[in-house]
Image (cartoon, rainbow, N blue to C red; front, side, top):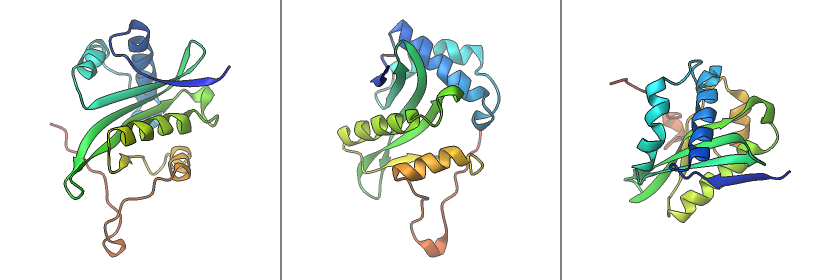
Length: 160
């Protein structure tokens, strides 16, 4: 059966269930932090996403089975004075990795970004996630640097 990548309707019960299941599987993976999503997050996530105009999600389906997810959040590039699209989450169930699901999800995110007139598509990846890194490089992503002499940018966080 062919792979289909479809936009998520955050109010559709089947889409809601699939999104939470896929994101929870990713969260439990070592590359997603190794911990399940909290119950309160599972309960309110889709309603929160539905309330935002700057978020889009796509699920990869094999028949009725959800096998991959990408969550995109729009930002803004002050250097280009245009929107940008960040791939906040991308997840493919372990049994479907290496079969083109991730590339199909990246293509959906890229098309959505183009439709929104974004100047670029961004994502973050752990350096040790060599399979994902290879996939992203193969799709055309490259490390971020404004000036090679200054080095590559590093992603940082501070919990609030």
